[in-house]
Length: 338
Image 1 (cartoon, rainbow, N blue to C red):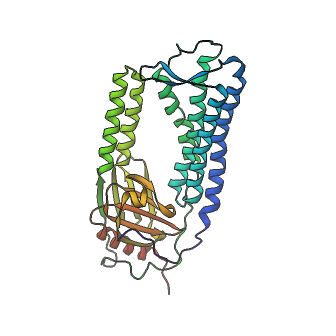
Image 2 (image 1 turned 30 degrees about the vertical axis):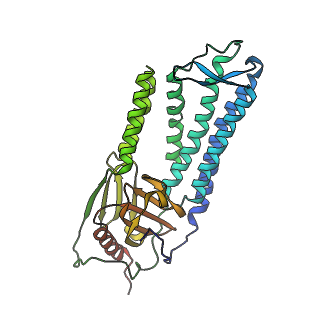
Image 3 (image 1 turned 90 degrees about the vertical axis):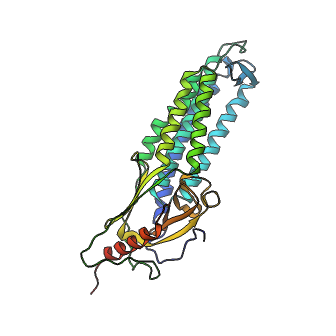
C-alpha cells in the first residue's frame, strides 16, 4: 500500500495558503532584487567588456568558451527567474507545513544571490580587457558564490513564520489504531532512523567533489564537500519520539526537525513508501500535496495526518507501535466533554 491520504474532517484547511502567499511574496521579491541588482550592474559594464566574454572554463581554470556579453547576462537573468519560479511554486502550492515554506523562502533568496554573484564575479575581471584568453577562474570564487548567499538564505528561512496552533475540533479517526494505557499511565516510543541509499549517494558526491578539488589543486573547492558532509549528516540520521506531547522528529545534529502536537493529530497510521515515486528521492522531502517526508528508505513508514491539511511521513521500523501510541495520546489531548 502506498502513502495515500484519507479524507478526515479538518478545521480551516485553507489557513496556510494566505501565509504561504505572503511568505513567498517577500522571499521571491528579495531573491529577485538580488538578481536584478546584479543584472543592472553588469549591464552598465557593457561598454567596458570585450565583444566576446569568457563564459566557460576548463578543469585547469583556462577559458574554453566565449559568448556575447548581453547574451551572457540574459542567461543568468533567466537562471535566476527559473529558480525563483520553482521555489515560489514549492512554497505556494506545497507549503502547507512551515518547514516547506522556510525551505522555499531560503531557496528563493539563495537563488537570487547565487545567480547574481556568479554573474558579477565572472564579468568583473574582464572589464577593460581586449584579450580574455588569460582570464582564469579561481576556485575560491566558485566556492564563495555558492556559500555566501547561504547567509541571507538562512536569515530568510528564520524570518518565515511558523505554523500557528490549530487544535483539532473532532475526535481522532475511529479506524486509527490505539494502544492500551491505564488512567494516568504514560508511555514513550523512541526510535532512530538512519542510513539508507541516499547516504551512499551522498558519500559518493562528497568523495567526487573532494577528489576534483585535489586534482585541480583548487583548495577553496574543498568547502563544497565539507558543506555536503554537513548536509548529508543532517539529512540521514533522525530521532523519532512519541510521548504525551505528540510526535517529535529531529536530526541528530539538531536541524532540521519538526513537531506535531498531540492535539493537532487527526490520525496516525502505517503506510508503505516509494521514495522516488512519492517524494522524488531520499532525505527531508516534500511530496505530492505538500506532504513532508523524512524518507531514508523504501518500505514501512509512520504517516501522521494533522490539522491544516498537513501530513508527515517518516520511514521508521516498528511504525505500528508509534502510530498506536500517537493516536492514544491524541485522544487524551482532546478537550473533555460532558
